[in-house]
Image (cartoon, rainbow, N blue to C red; front, side, top):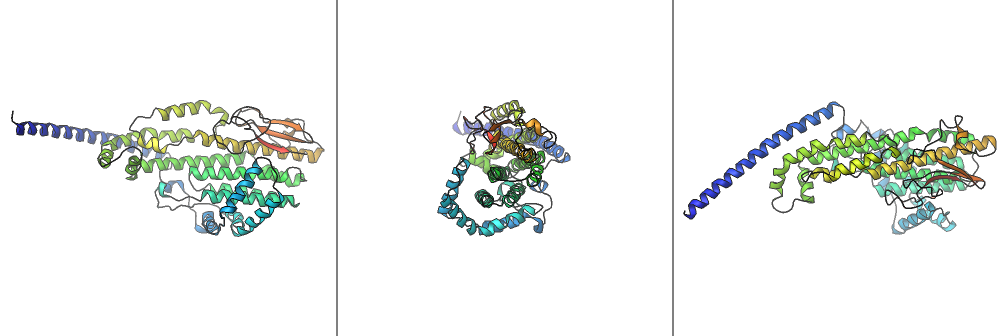
Length: 445
């Protein structure tokens, strides 16, 4: 057989194969596209947010705390030595060391440098909404508040509040820290899992400074009762709602990646390389639709657990990890976009533990103010000051409470489920800490 005929036949075969591939691809694309469309229509009918616009309620500029925070970011004044100072003093502080006199002097200068930023916190906390990013931006292009500036600002706010308490104005310090809690919570209304985690860290910082501002200082029941009322399960429900909003924002990001041209860029950056990127993406596009249709349900499953006690979620996380580990090769969007959520939920549980230990601690203080002594057990506070004995979110059992000298300590066992004597490690570096993982409220006298 002559070479031209051989080449012609090979060409015909290749054309037939190519036509078959294109036909199969077209059929698969249509089939998967229809399935995805039906799934999304069903989700929309259920009221589930699928776009950035769906996530956000109207927020006029005069009510938007983010417009003030953007101004604060421009006023923010930290230099290299300022950053080092704040980091070092804060790390010593969370490890239980008092602030030294010379450090207070340096902190005072840093606070005054950022006075205009700090003065905006009460007004931002008092606004009714917080929307930082542009409405017309795709989810991965939407800007969020500067995390570092938020965290450093709240730490400065905490140190100034503690200094006010040390100077004798405990009421003023507590009022400021209540404002700090509202500020941190307000900033989490920008729909993003990252902003939720930033707010969580800042709310925990405020609770830490609240404990330190009260411990060993005179404060009557009339001062503590309003705070006890604010540190109730409603604050935990607020955190759960913010987490739910963060998960919903992650689902919008997942859809934006899977349904827009941006998916090619994401896929290319992860595993499709070279000149074949566009062709490869076009060929697997039907499978990306299948990936999105089959795995978007993961977000609803996680969202449904936002109010579930952390102590009852261990089996769920095993199943969650297995599902993510079993994703097929073509599940490009799922592998890129679906986050590992267990650590996020665990950090939420540490906040819940701090809220409950704070509530128990405040109730003990009020009990002493009324009776002259701390209770022998937390049950003595029910029902006059507490509806029930607060439970440890990690164990589902009552918080640990015991007298220590002239004071007391009440604490959660933390993620390692072990009694570390109320000792804490403030910075979380892993899901289960080897030691000193308790979350405590302590009074020295």
